[in-house]
Image (cartoon, rainbow, N blue to C red):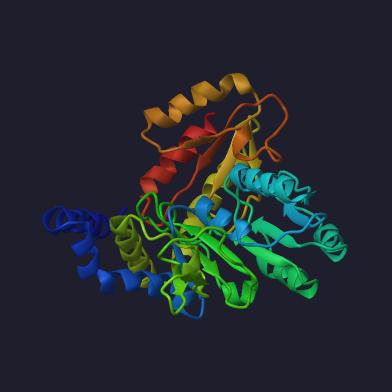
Length: 367
């Protein structure tokens, strides 16, 4: 998180403490509206009304999934490289409505047969649900090509952009998705507990849950409730209660992002990540996940000898290198079944100093 974004969050909380939550929100209405304008520009949408604030990409994913109408026998097509939370949501939702989930197998490089996916969609698919970029490796899926397949066959198309937005150029119009999700706390460098959902206005998505933020009572001439009128835009998926501080913090982070060229950001990130991936590929003790060259900044790999995992983690920590560990529940249908217990993940950003890349490569070379 940048100093500017942190100041935005802290200053709002100070205002809230001074004047109270309701008044602080009223006085920040203009800034809150700017969030929607910046979010729709971040994913190259058409109008701020296509954006709903969410507390995470996972929440946005579920908002979209539960906003789709299913019937018994419907089919959901996805990939084995999907993030664990996304898969859980798909399988659980399918069990609720009598649908089935068709999983297209991806290998360790992320490669899968696009023709197999097309055939399954052509058989009849209610939804195609995939990630733009994987969480555990350098996989970047062909979202535009998949979008063409989905639309050609009348399937709804939802894309998880959690690991894409902020590092990879995103254009929801060319992807042709019905919904696209994003988080604030990763590549956008916003606060945790923030994200958003893009909803294509031509989609068939309808909010499963509503409150006064999304709907109004319709009263008859005796002032009795005669129905409920739900708003038509993406904000039907929002709830009235939210972290305004977090919302404004994410808005600030997106403002910083939009002032830079995403192509320049991606060029720097991928150069750093590709250098690290090259080092991993050269070490016979390690196994790279995904492609050696990718536009994603996510570097995923594992130690071929699980007994060396703890020592490798200690070496990274000793050098002060931030590294995250992923387990089988994070990518249950993709996780290597060779006895390993951990996937190591490095995610250099454009502001990462060259010295940190040098240090990471040094640890990897001696692993």
